[in-house]
Length: 288
Image (tube, rainbow, N blue to C red; front, side):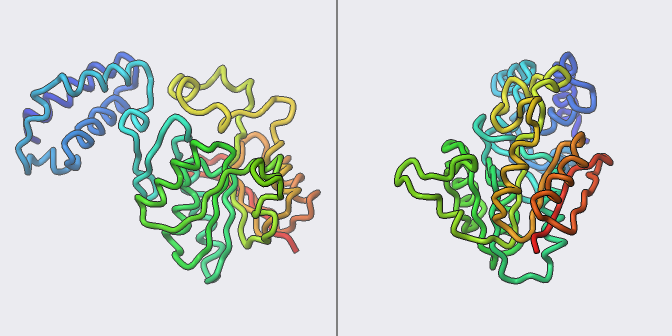
């Protein structure tokens, strides 16, 4: 490895280790280097291009300082790479997780033989699920809704930057009356082939065990639900019965309850699948 690169990565890493484990600090150091040079880690390691980037710590130190206050690096740089997509991110949108990519893969696997599929993504946020599905299946019709106008603007920008045509609109599933026209939202006029949602599912009481990079920066409305009614979003989506196949990302603590809820709402062929960490994370069901 280029000795100068190795030294500078080590310098950044050593500062970050006051707040992060060594392996995470190293990963963040490389992330900074890749972002600000436009080079991959491999290119930097083999020294295929000469760069004076590391000589100017004035560019790097403000980033390190923000990381030491636990601001997510995805918000610092304003985007992230996820499931092959380059996604704009702001504090109005959650940072997409690997588990959510597994949700997309599950839909792709189960709908592999379906050519014309109409999809509704409820609580779309950055638009990551809707855009990933449209990218994989250009022939599908995909709609994403979210209660946050700011999130919908980000989702629309992400569709443009990833060259897909996804329809996004502001909608509240607990009040589908349009505040502009006083008419029912257009989504209620459709029967979708697939309804997918990664709704808020973390109980307020779980905050005590969460890290400040999530608690202090990511949108609380997209994360938390009351302890007294943690399944409110799942119940409402199931009751709406908008799609013949339903795909949920779920809390690991409520897989049995969500399966029961779907059964009570008339769904059949209900299954829960574990994520890469071995936790119950995806529940699916069908309407007859």
